[in-house]
Length: 282
Image 1 (cartoon, helix red, strand yellow):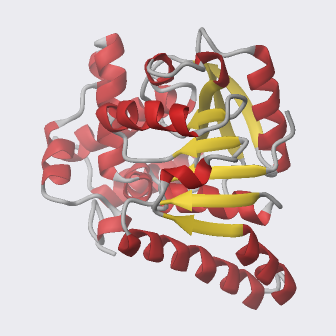
Image 2 (image 1 turned 180 degrees about the vertical axis):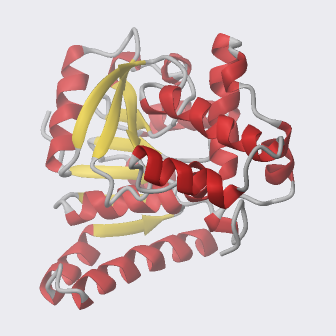
């Protein structure tokens, strides 16, 4: 199936970034939010990003206008009816996703694919509440979605080979490098990354080193572009907590048990960059 029109559910940082990526890659794109305020905020963020790219000479004004013309905001799920592929990028909460997937299943045409941008939740479970489990898989983007080159394509035990091939071609058309992972908690990147991030939080919590020294040590000692605590602020402490809990739930490995400090920071609304405060102030 040729992908021509794409739907994105959610216009937050990730959903908006995915919608931006699809529209600027030439796809007719519909992005949906739950209320007008959130939709306006997300659309403004995308338009501002294109305007900045034009100022930097990365896009012409004509390209900006073409991108804007391809991107459509909506509050109605019904506007996805003629989409060939829909990417779900709502909050990392399984109950929310299990409400959304049957609604999408009823709304979309029979041949349409439904993809989840989840970073750690079971896509098998999401597919099971639809009548098209073979047309469902994960397509996990990394933040910021328009910039980061990697996507994880997540195959469930029900996903068809044709779906995987179609999604792989779609990912390549967005300028991404796809890797294939099985539908196990954390997929590839988070399965390896989360223990490292949680270990850095435990070091800070136990007074083993300062936040600056932990970050500096990993940047200069391992050649990483940013330290773990800076990265946590960038990814989002709430997102990291959800991912850690999902992996711990599946494996019961203490490496994935969220430290008390992480839980307290999230409970206090300290999510990192997006809230203005995490391990650092913004």
